[in-house]
Image (cartoon, rainbow, N blue to C red; front, side, top):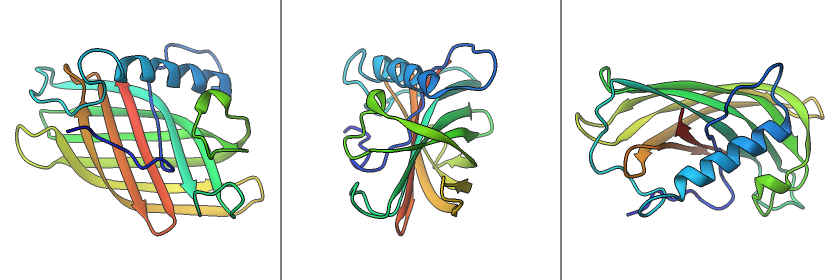
Length: 191
């Protein structure tokens, strides 16, 4: 069984490396490439982790993608790409993190982050999830925050979500959350 995100809803995060100063859209594209490399390497790519790793905590980082409105480019939708960071804490059975440094994306129907163009916008999302059961690779929780589009419209997020460790050695972690016409998903790779 694979962890699959709906085609129109993707918040992607990948190992980011070090940068000086604020992240750019080019930095986010680089993070996406690193995630894609890890998610698609090994047996099965982003398949859920069968055996939990032996680490107590681990940091994951990458990019975030959100869609507000319809998934059609001709609709009144807003799509944004940002930087995502999270910590998986297996001792306390929780995941927490933030997404920020967002860019409003001009054309998003293909979800090809490498071709994304856009302008900086303000916003922050936070996420907190708890492990569904001891020894399980899945987590449930919330994604909350606000993103303000280029036109000044603020969009509030207060979404139920779920997450899963993926890859043979828990190289990636994904979160998906949606409610009504607002959706977010977070895919990260371990630092």
